[in-house]
Image 1 (tube, rainbow, N blue to C red):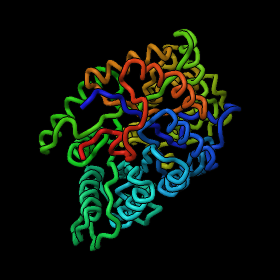
Image 2 (image 1 turned 45 degrees about the vertical axis):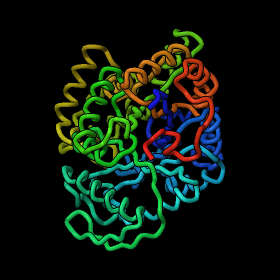
Image 3 (image 1 turned 90 degrees about the vertical axis):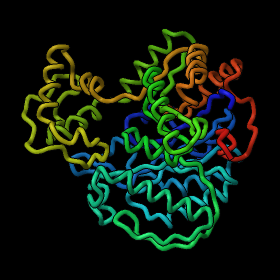
Amino acid sequence: MSHRLHLGVFFTGVGPQLIWTDPAFSSHTHIDTFIATAKTLERGLFDAFFLGEGLRVRENRGRVHDLDVAGRPDAITQLAALAAETSRIGLVATQNTTYNFPADLARRLAGLDAISGGRAGWNIVTTDNAWTGENFRNGGWLPHDRRYARAGAFVEVAKALWQGHPVDRHDDLIDVTAAPTVPARPVLFQAGDSPGGRDLAARHADVVFSANTDYHKAIAYAADLRRRLAGHGRSPDSLRILPGAAVVLGDTPAEAAEKARWIQREQVTGPRALAFLEQYWGKDLSGYDPDGPLPDIEPTEGELDPSRGTISIEHRTGKAERIAGWRRLAAERDLSIRDLVIEVTPQHSTFVGTPSQIADEWSRYVRDRAADGFNILPQLLPGTIEDIVDKLIPELQSRGVYRTEYEGTTLREHLDLPG
């Protein structure tokens, strides 16, 4: 296997990652934005275009969280439209194994693979969120520690159907009798980082969308995953590791650093900072100055309202202790509400520098097998994508770590995966 860097773009559509206030920002809900983005990525010889998934509109204290895009079209439907407008780039749909049905989803993904000429991918995700489950009359039917067990069983059913095998399975995770319809072989992506997620990836995934972007963490993660691959009888080269990352480019290091500071402030606006704290206080904080001190009122009793839909399981309890810690931190460092939220909100790993600097850094990742590439999380559209394609890609090509043309037509070929 050649040490070539692979790139995708993860188009989430919600959250503070994308800076909607920028006057040059393209409309998120219009199909023209998706088409233009995909075509620019194809011009940059990217492997794949990812779409996120949202099974319920996010809320803040029981109301639609209108500081983010309120809803997204179905990913497979959107990608089917892009299949007609592109010819090479892979089209990856994030689809949930907890609240879909195996035979139905397998058929829809096979349809996307067929009409795109083998360019479909499935980003396999799970959830134990009862708030999401209410949209499916299931609530929290699946215990947290069982969600990956169902995902594994779900993928086994889908694979069997794609390979032309009838399925008759009835247990506590899957209840299905189905005949195969459309043969397919979508590329399987997996994004979980827990032990269960890593094991699911080692058993089934072709690509891992990792959160381990820091070099040393990436090295450790890759070594662990390759050990798990061996345990399932798979070779180290049967899986591609693509950590999620943001990129900020500048003509000089100082310019890039200043741009990165601006992006961080724009991603956490005053209203967003207040809305973030409202989750924890359980009260309307709109009367507080986001550039002033933390709220001087006590939070409501009880743990977090799950209606924002993004609270990780380890943060769903212990809010009183967390708020007390934030107050100490704000007092020690004289932080405003907005400053504190920037400080305590998990940030996407970001590569900041000139195109030459980042090309050198990424070449090191690939050379040392820390990662096989990156899944880019853009902050500005179309600006972030155009900068990468026009400025960073040529630097990577000059170092011999990035393709100069597509050598195949399918996503599996782009990723140089075993046939």
